[in-house]
Image (cartoon, rainbow, N blue to C red):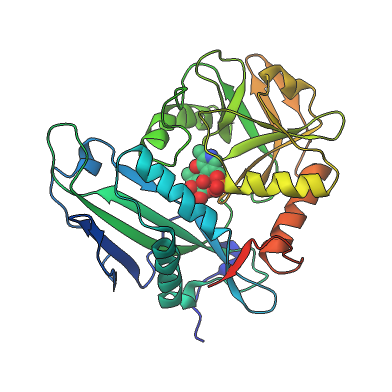
Length: 339
Ligand code: PLP
Ligand code: COI
C-alpha cells in the first residue's frame, strides 16, 4: 500500500483535503445509494435551511492503524446512534446506523493511504455531517438533506499534545441552555461558544470551562470536550448535566475508571470542587484525554500540576484508553470494529 507522504508525527488537528468523500441525499422520505466524490465543495440552494436556521449536525470519530496492522474504528456504533439523536432533535432526516457505518467504511477505504501508521501518535479523523439543503424561508424543516462523510489525518487537538492545558471558568457567557440543544452535536452550540473561547485564548488560556446556565454553580463542560476531576479519595468525578454532550470518550473512561478502582461518580459538580481535586482532565475524541494543569476561577486558581508532566491519574487513564484503541491492550468490551 502506498501511504501519503506526510510528516505523520507532527500533524496538527486541522482540515486537510484527502482523495474522496461520500455523499447521500434524502428526498421524498428516502436516502439514495450515495456516491464517492473527489469534490470538496457543496452546491445547494441559497435558501437551504442549514444556512439560515441551523439545520446541521455532525459527528467526530477516529480510525486507527493498530499494532497488528488492522484498521479499526473506536465505538463507531455510538457515534451512529448519537447522529440519529442529533438529527431527530432538530427535525432533520437521520442516516440509519448501518448506513452511517457503511459510509464511514467506504470513505476510509477510499482514503486508505491517509490512515496514519501505527506508532506515530496520529489518527484518521472522521467527520460525518448532515445538513438541511432544501430551501425554506419560513422557519421550518427542509424537505431535502445531504449526509456527507469526509476524513483527514490529524495529530492532537490541543497543540500541547499530552501536556497540561490551562482552563478558565466562564461565568458570563453560556454555551447551552437547560432544555435546549447542548446535549446534541449541532453547529449552533459551537457558534455559541466562539465568543468565550476566543476571549479565553486572548487572555492566555487554552480553553474555557462552562458553568450551568441556570445557576452558574455547577460545571458543565469545556468547549470541545467533557471535563473530569479526581477527588481526594481518588474517585473519577464528572458532571451530570442536561446541557452537555454525552461524550463517548467519557463514557469509555467511566468504564475504565471503574475497572481501575477509581470509583466513577457522574453527578452535578459544584465549581468549588475544583479547589479540592488532585488531578483533572478534558476528554473527547479530538482531545483524547488532555490533562488540565490549572483552572482559573475569578481571582482564584486551582493548580493540579506544574510544568509539562501530566498528573498520575490522567496518565494512567490515557495509557489504558489509547492502549485499547491501538490494539496494545485487549478490547474486552467490543469497542473496536475493523473497518
Ligand atoms: N463535548 C463537546 C462539546 C464536544 O464537541 C465533544 C466532541 O465530540 C465532546 C464533548 C466529546 O465527545 P466524544 O468523546 O464523543 O468525542
Ligand atoms: C471531536 O472531539 O470529535 C469534536 O467534534 C470536537 C471538536 C469540536 C473538534
